[in-house]
Length: 241
Image 1 (cartoon, helix red, strand yellow):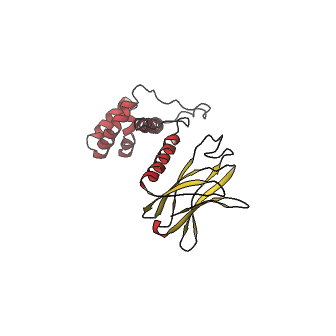
Image 2 (tube, rainbow, N blue to C red):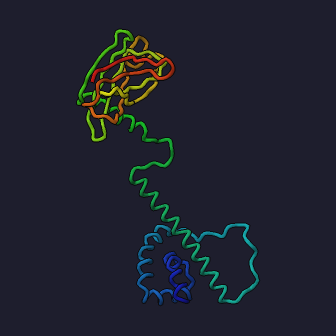
Image 3 (cartoon, rainbow, N blue to C red):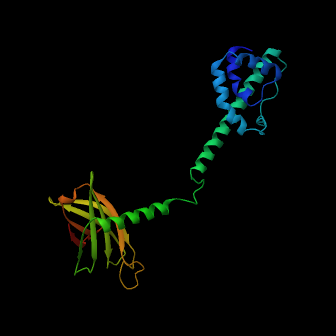
């Protein structure tokens, strides 16, 4: 057995795939090769994982058996097949180990158990906390009947903003904008209003709560406006900052 072939046979030796003459030759090589020692130690856990799994069969429909060839070429072909089998099994074991680690960390395979509801709940909790702890202002509009409360909190990038809105009937598409001292409107959030709206007779929701952000500091905001989106857009509610 040559030195390069011995290096290639580390995986086959770890999985017990070497024939007796090759196994003895590899063990003789192993006694003086530190890299093979290290690789064999790394593969020992994979070999234990694959204990009981038989060799992978050749794919059906392959090429017909070749004519007899010298024994030396036969041995080379066997080594190459062992190498492919060992690499395939080691790769499969690595995939099993990664999958087990993912499941142990709490991940679920499949799309039916999405963590999206938990994220939505977290966003609602964040808006409620901001409305409780942030700087709040409230207003109502006699013409549209809409009423709402806006809370702001400064951040390094601008402002976090939360809105509670009521007495609005849909269907509408709306947005909340923060208007600065120069009259520029910075979009905070957008949403659609159902036909029955919020906080009106027959409305399933007493109010809407949304949270967003604007690239403007709280001190630079003069007012907030709830606007409808689309042709004939209008302002439903103005809340001073």
